Image 1: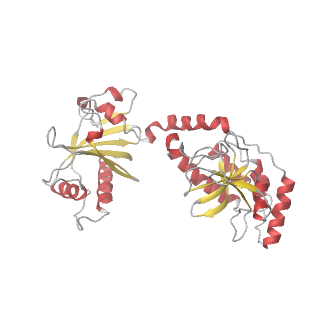
Image 2: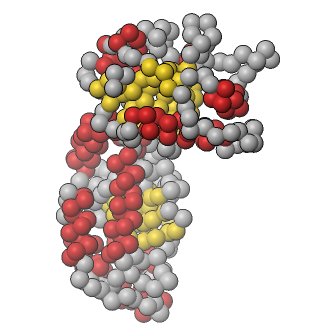
Image 3: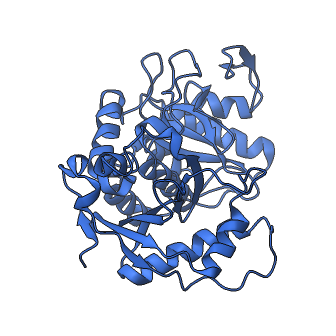
Length: 354
């Protein structure tokens, strides 16, 4: 297909005439039944993504739609990033149904009916737009390769992004946490007795640990193995089973894998240097379910002032991980109501916080 270009290191040097913008009619748009409905923008996006996928017979990672300025061009152009690190360039035919849909979703018309030329970015979970004036003048229609390079999806540079994250984490990884298992065991049993909890008996989790290690590329921490020798979850209580621990860990590992290091890092927050200023890492292993996508985790990549095996709070409602207790044993003692010191996200010392 002559309008597909392979992503290479010299993409940035390519000019407009190095690409073929063959016309394509979008035939996946249905009749517009309910103008101005809030879902129309997403229906428009999905129809375009489907049309480009059917045209190329490849998965579409991201689609750019460049709208005309009606001065230098009256054409709509599409640039699609496809599986296999291929780039598809198109001219989108301004058919009556396409025009009807686009006029409906384009909300930036002035009193004379003129619209601002824009760049739309579409993906399965992405819908955004910006004015072409945000881009260096002449870049789109002259230094087109440099323009395209600014929008390269993460899938095209996955190896580079993975290395950046691995290099960042490597100095902090500490899988061997110091702990007194006898104290942990005694306090856990005391917790079960005092709260009259029903413990699911421990079982052989070797298959679960093997699956974890295959995905994580590091051993399942012995601290958690020892802890899971005491139980396999607790009925109607946030203590998680081995299966649920690994399931939730995998879910957060997917977040980590799909985000860049810049997206994961929060340089505006502080936590006294005990946990990394990250939204999540594969070395935070959830073990206590706070519900609504929030967890307590055992941290095996602490920051410089932290310790391996410390308990942190992270999840959907947290920008970064915050220290909850300096060890699993300290955390279990806090559940018993014993006087233990912990710090909240502001660094304030608190006690008896389960």
